[in-house]
Length: 251
Length: 322
Ligand SMILES: Nc1ncnc2c1ncn2[C@@H]1O[C@H](COP(=O)(O)OP(=O)(O)O)[C@@H](O)[C@H]1O
Ligand SMILES: [Mg+2]
Image 1 (cartoon, rainbow over the protein chains, first blue to last red):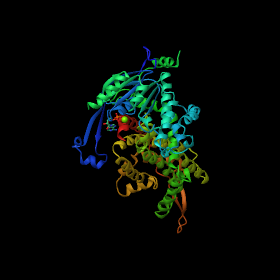
Image 2: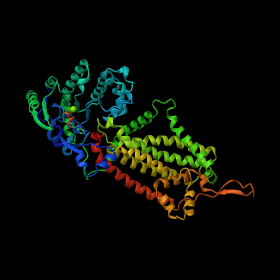
Image 3: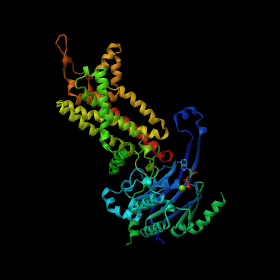
Image 4: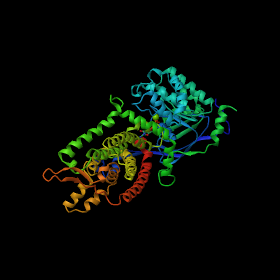
């Protein structure tokens, strides 16, 4: 598969990353005042990530797997800088693009075209560069007829098509993909897989969350299994899938 | 060398970037925050345009509404306060006076109202991508400035048409006052936008507070009315308290800059019995206005720095709290 040569530089380095969520049950002033002092009763906190330590080398494709709620999306968000870890450090280098759950950060009231420019700007492209790539983005997404429609009228499949098309056109060194591809239709999924394989040949790093053992098996060089926020397995793909099954049984 | 190897080599040469701002104290802070914003200025421009577009997107008259609203307010205050309540009798060029106050106040209140909800209303972006979140309250400032600019053109146009263009050094008060409003508006927008994520009551509280401050500022009545009231009610400190508000000071300075009639003795008409002219004396502008502005500017910058620090601490949890 990829030529993860000996001297491949580390691009993502997580050290002892822990993330705690505090779930407050009230949001308004009245409730806060009424519950003042007893506020701990109305708080629940739990660790979505516990002491996660990972080094990810350039050019690898990592499959991040685990049961629902095991912390996969949370880990991707911490890597993406969207949420902050409570403990530990996260370091990264290179340009990053992320496809997190549904919607790549689109604004529902804007058209597809406007969102392309907005997103590309967020991911670090200038207006000029985006104009250059625009046609190619739209072609890849195959939704040219809807590009001037507000994205709130898009189906979830169309959403992902556009989001994926943007993410792969901003020349990322690191690509985070969270389960989103599952909503695309089959031809589009195949197209995405082909694109991901192309990315692998180009030495880009891909962190990939999927529930499809088949996809994981065919794409990933390495699998990380999470369970209750902890890394319970980190290693080659085949054993990783066995470890995932074991983690389902053991919970 | 293959593409992959080239990439690996380039990446190996890059320094590591620490992701997520340190939650407590230390490094960077205000300056680092500003640098991050500067690196995203193209995006900021895009967000401002988006905000303007979104506001009037499905309306036929579009951005004309940004003029219709203040002009309607002008008309209402001109008729109700100026004529019915008779404020215009003591205030020469009442229309210019009111529109000046409304224009600057409009900037302030728009920055704060739009700024306060800016984080919550951009939840879609904040939950999915990382960008310096200060950019959202800043974009509110940008779109408020655009509307302010449009109103300024009308205001200056009116002074020219009415032969009241304030050709004097006092004109410098206009940018100074605008700057004060921008500093305080931005500081509050940054602070309140972060608090509003945790406590949605903030946005309603802001509406009420703005209403109070509107009437507590010399917008539809003049500063001289406040001084007279203070004298009448034997509360000489009232004027000092009133003028302690940076908004009042900024609005007064703005009026001093653009409302030339306020700095002259103006003949308002003739007394019907005696035939003597009725004269509105020049406004009693507060003493040391320049010093006050300077001082308030400095305090405002301090406040802005504090607001940014608070924001910076709270923003780490935005994505999960919205
Ligand atoms: N914003 C949030 N506030 C509170 N709890 C959250 C939040 N986001 C995720 N969680 C919790 O963290 C745990 C891990 O979630 P997640 O990372 O989304 O799991 P998954 O592995 O299915 O992607 C879940 O129990 C979820 O309820
Ligand atoms: Mg998930």
